[in-house]
Amino acid sequence: MRRLGRFLVRFFAVIGLLTLAALAFGLWAVVQIADKVEPALPKRLVLTLDLDGKFHEGSGGDPFARLAGAKDYPLRRAVEAIDHAAGDARVTALFATLGHSSLGLANAQEIRDAVGRFRAAGKPAVVFAETMGEFGTGTLDCYLASAFGQVWLQPSGDVGLTGLVVESPFVKGTLDLLGIKPQFAGRHEFKSAIEMFTETGFSEPHRQNLGQLLDSWTLQIVDGIAAGRRLPPDKVRALLGKGPFLASEALSAGLVDHVGYRDAALGTAGDAKEVDILDYWDSARPKARGAKVALITGAGPIHRGESDHGFGASEDFGSETVAKAFRDAILDKDVKAILFRVDSPGGSYTASDTVWNEVRRARAAGKPVVVSMGNIAASGGYFVAMGADRVIAQPGTITGSIGVFAGKMVLKDFWPKLGISWDAMHRGDNATMWSANTPFTPQVWERMNALLDRIYADFTGKASAARGIPAERMDQLARGRIWSGADAKAAGLVDRLGGWHEAGVAVRETANLPPEAALNLVTFPRPSKPLELLAEAFSGGPAAEIRVLARAVRLLEPLLPLVEQRGDALLWQPPMVVR
Image (cartoon, rainbow, N blue to C red; front, side):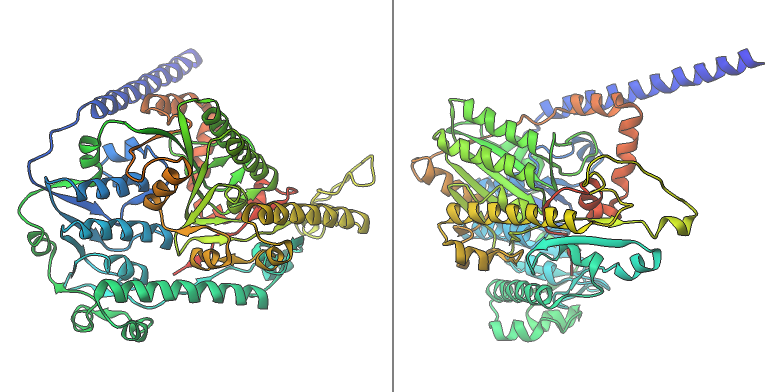
């Protein structure tokens, strides 16, 4: 019986492995074929874009998501496709659908700018929304839709122009109940990441800083809707926060042009064949030509080591991967400039400093560096960017947060509640400095504050030199304060406002290229091919399975930098819930 049991276990194990292998081979074959087959475009087409799709900073996207029919858009490719289509005689119109976009404000501005250039070329752009809210906020959706020449809303839909709200959790009360004592220190009063553990609500500096950010964002949204809808700013300001508006009310207020269904909206874009924007770009993208420009992306929390860009991974910023990309670009004699796309809340101080140094080395080697910022380039995300030849942000980009914090959770009074006791032995006065079982001693607290003072001085000193801002003024701009991209531009923390389009202009300027010169953007490091992603997914063993499970626990993502890097000095701006 035991032999039969062992045989059955081995038999089903072999069948399972063969099934997985067949699945992997089948997926690889389909992806390989899909990569090589480029269907001919019709002579007349309507370019379609699903604004509710997933947008990300990476260049390649998720090939498996596309095979499954999911909308997975690399933001840069979407922008490039819209810009190219503006001059393509085959493209008669742009037709977008919208319900509740997951785009942040800065990336929404990226799409708005591209739609504006498309319309400036004399081509119609139509957006259809089933709803802009539906028992949720639709403020950003209304702002995004206002860039289009025609805005259609389904009769059952509404426009949730409810305004903006920033929410942040505070868990000090829970920690007190559990007997967990947070011991953190930051530089300085606006470095608010630690307040979720040490306070029960916004401190006055935190409230002041968030209020300034909300004021800037509100002004941008009001001005954008007013310009797009050709409404007086005062009228839009009066409407903002009074939603949701029923479809008939939105029509009367001038927030939409038509109330109807998708088929009617699509009919106004012409009778040409619909082609998704990425399918269009796969076929219409011109062959690489022009000056070679290294495109390096740093997206996600910054940490030491390599980026995880494997199958199913979210955007990840490993300093070793990004630093090596810079080193390779420096050694490549054909590379004329480097375009560094940054979308990061920050992370490890030492990892950020590693990348900052590679930016410095690239410039010293005669390779100009242009930084383009996405939704956020804060704390370590600003550290890696500030030394470039040109720093470009969208008006809505969360920028700055020049500061640092470090600390730990002390569990000394928590363990007895579980009936757990600890014992320890150590050698060295500060050996227990980062133990969760021992509070900071006065001697250790002095050492940690000395480290934070040095890091803050290093951060502000490098920012002062890079931006040409006197040290005293830089300290006023720093202290952990966050800025919108528009306010950062006024303060001198960034050079100009815009996105991928403006970054291309800056690359030509810094590389001494003609204004209309073609740019050949080459991704460094080379993106993984589908077969390589499959190999990694199926060869990772138990560790890979654990990583896949960990990625599913996204509700804990805002806390991961604190959990994973306990004891490190963090240049980190926590994600905020903005509605």
